[in-house]
Amino acid sequence: MSESADLRADRYGARPPRRRRWIPLALGAVVILAGLGVAFVGFRSYGPSDIDSESLGYTVDDDSTTSIRMKVTRKDPHRPVVCIVRAMTRDGSEVGRREVLIEPSDSGTVEVNTIIKSSARPAAGHVYGCSDQVPDYLRAG
Image (cartoon, rainbow, N blue to C red; front, side, top):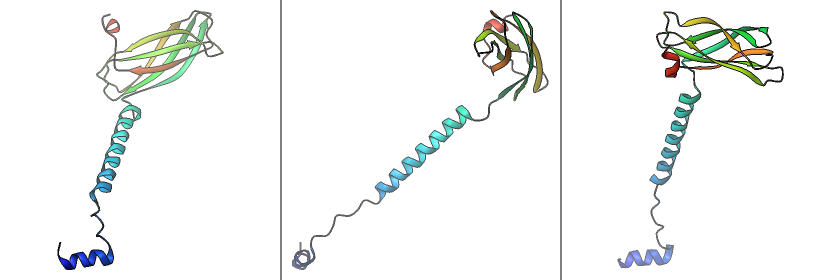
């Protein structure tokens, strides 16, 4: 170091080390990218579905039979869909379950009637949910 630099350092103290300004910027970018990744995964998992189902009504036919009417709407009506319907007692216990194959159609929305056999007297019936992952044993028929 030169003499003037030594005098300056003695008088004013050593120069502080250079700050790394890129570290906070890099951390901020990582946090933003992580947030976008979480938002994307959440939207794919919990966003609008390709298949919507709705229970339109049910009737308890006898001590072991319930009839359910449902509406299924799908974005691609040319793909088959499987829906699970359930029969339940007054306390909410499941006493019957059935998988219903919804065949491909020209219409995006179809109404389906189905019957569920139950192990005890049912008090209600409803659509549990639908999926386009149709098991092979339903397609084989």
